[in-house]
Image (cartoon, one colour):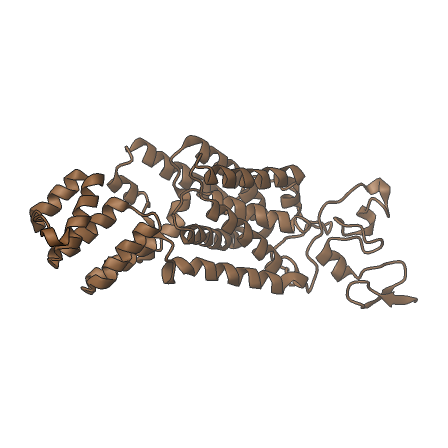
Length: 379
């Protein structure tokens, strides 16, 4: 038999083919002619035009991505003939129940907390579960509808492609990473958009491997998600809408990295590097994030617990520099200066606080006294 090397791995293969079966499966190409998006030669539109175009390559024995996809008896990945699986349905229902419960309960602070809502500072200070629970919370109907639609479509295709257990693991990772990346930008977000972009990122990168994903992540879907992402960035920069673009970007990169790490053997190193980089970014809000008001608030809280008033004053000043809650910062400064009997600083802090919140200034005065006029020499 005449043999020659596979063009991808140099393994000896029969003449008449350009790829070995393993490389053809890994790359989603025809083994005979190299056409992308097919696996078997009898499904290739060039080698067998009557067979038509077969969209997706299956897993092959020995491939590092084995186990992420499932083959049909014909050797091709399964098609999208089934409804979403149990995990997708559970996540869909949880979003409906939690968002609906918030909408019909008035939105009071205590109610929000019962439904899993927490502030960014609380998450940084140990309420890590908020990274996950915030994905189920939506305040606006259009936001909820958009996210539920893509959760049903993309989540259903993903679950059919990789299985329910891996879908749970992917959801937890995508939710935590996208929420933490958003928190690292200086604010905390809500909603399933980060997970939606993670699903899209995985489907975009790995649609050559899974028929279900190829059917829903077509070119129009790619244009929609990329276009919407660009619009959201512009709208947020112009102050038109407050949008969690960090969650969108973090989710998209997470999905791409996971696809490269687990769906393609030859891209494994790149995928792992991407996941490691995202984990590093996700840790910033919990280690060092001085541009974040939430991070500064946590540092102040911890400093006050240690009675380190110099560090607390520095934290309040830093919060003002990054555009944090000015009334909260000036009140904190006024209370520290009043407690330490630092007359000049107390007077200035109280003046700034009164301009922002007169009732808060009155309360501070009742606790620490009305500042006396400065001596003439100090004016």
